[in-house]
Amino acid sequence: MDLRPYQVAAAVAVEREWLKLFRTLLVLPTGTGKTIVFSALARNAVAAGGRVLILAHREELIRQAADKLAKATGLACSVEKADESSVGRLELVTVGSVQSLLNLARRDAIAAPTHIIVDEAHHALAESYQAVLRHWPEAKVLGVTATPDRGDMRDLGAYFESLAFKYTMPQAIAEGYLCKIKALTIPLTIDLGAVKVQGGDYQAAGLGAALEPYLAQIAAEMAEHCRGRRTLCFLPLIDTSCKFVAMLNAAGLRAREVHGLSDDRAQALQEFHDGRWNVLSNAMLLTEGYDEAGIDCVVVLRPTKVRSLYAQMVGRGTRIHPGKDHLLLLDFLWMSERHSLCHPAHLLAEDDEVAKKMVAAAERAAGAAMDIDADALAQAKADVVADREAALALKLAEMRHRKRELVDPLQYAASVGAVGLMDYKPVLPAEAALPGAEQLEALAAAGIFPGEVTSAGHAAAILGAVQARKAAGLSTPKQVRCLERYDFAHAGQLDYVTAQSFIRRIAANGWRVPHGMKPEGEKT
Image (tube, rainbow, N blue to C red; front, side):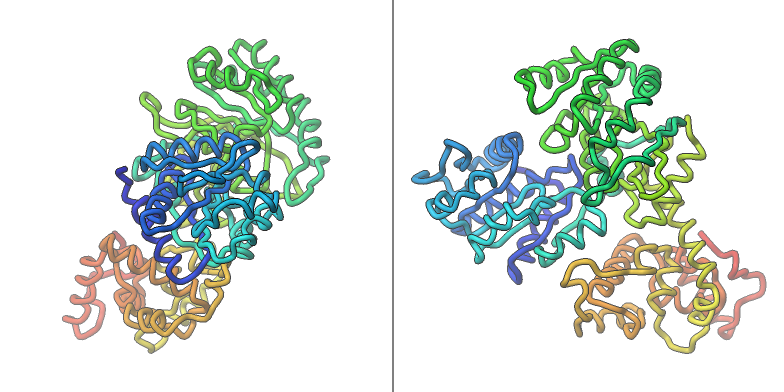
């Protein structure tokens, strides 16, 4: 099994965390091979004399985990589900259904695992999962999930002790492991004002009623933009999905509805794969465990406030496939005054202000496809940093002219355009702890004033940014501190060689800015 570089790094990071604690998280976007990574971890655990339990909650995920484990590692596994049992089997890996393992007698009957892997870890906080996990308190636990937002991570932090590794969608797209995304904002305003919110998200029944008046218009838009594409639609209710499919077919598309109660669900999925249907509509059935790589258009008609759910839906279309240049994501103008909604921007932007900048840009360009990529993200981040710098102008000016040799963390974050460092807030318990002595020493050595670093997570984030910039050949904190004393407005955007050249010229001129050098405009 040949792992991609980030998959190797992920497995190493998880095993490192397991050496010092029991429960850790791995965040990988949909389509980047989370099953491959945890299969490698299972193989390593077995090789070291361990026994592994992989927990899942749906038939598709159970079979998928078993199949990929065998293909990736050659390890056979037993299944603990319904009338299938691992009792008396020789395999050292078991894929188990949470529903079946809720039975105490079944838990007592199977061999105790040394390692437990929770597929789709956002389910781990449910009491059903917790009952199973509590049964083996000495087991090392890994939770695997797609891109969560801060709220999801805060909730997961109630159980998981650390985040071992995180690979982001922008990284995966830039490195060619996921396809490019183009978002097309359709200028059709859908009113969600009357839809109630329950459990942090919109009620499905209310969404169905709110959508129905617009379905015919949406079908007409899809007939224009989705013809010739393999399109997956998500709707809130089976009844709404069935009505929508009828309208899509009337509009000239070849559409099929699939739901959990369908006797011919497998046949429908196969027919979509074979090209008989070019649109597949579902009522939230295919958010997990559906890996049809040929999908090149996704239509989310189940608006949500939950970033991880939105990422799961869109992630069905982000896999690389021959002949597939990009994923087209249709986005509608959901009208909701009371609650913020997930948009294509939220796939890339972790900061809400950055996402809002990207959403605003997409809405201004409504009717034209917009690349959801690193460039759009960088521009939005730059806009947010500019806004925050304007609000903090006096404070940053005071910091830049202090006599201390080390750069203040806020000053450094603003200079290098690191939005996430400008108002860092810890999420997991380990991140909220005080910085360790080694971290404080490393910060000072790097040129960062440690006295204003608020937590261990803040320290780790700053040091990670410093290391990443060093690898990219960008200016160091000490160079930033030096040049900003001389009013270089963009010291954080300079590369290392250019920054060093400026410092040498200033030093050679008696530590005065040479004539003709314009600090306020110096930028690469």
